[in-house]
Image (cartoon, rainbow, N blue to C red; front, side):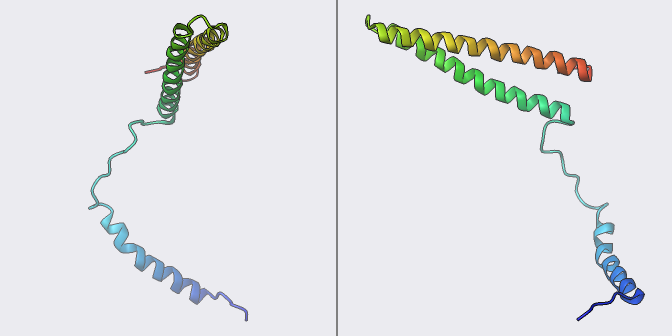
Length: 119
């Protein structure tokens, strides 16, 4: 079965949609104002916020690993394998902290160069 669209059916469909949408359009002015649930006003601030939360989480993990490495090192009791393991954890968590700080500085520098201002 073929459906043919005639000018009359198109006009009736448009008229029906208009009649259905008219109450929505007139009520739009009386609707309460919805505040922005996101505290960021543009994509630049949102991007920096996401990076800031990500780097803060990684910094917390790296700091916990640094503390864990110190605990392993101090409680090794002269066991050479445990001392090496503690030193390795301390070394790699220190490198992680330096990389996190360096990446934050680099991101701030790049964003400031591209956008012109950083909060």
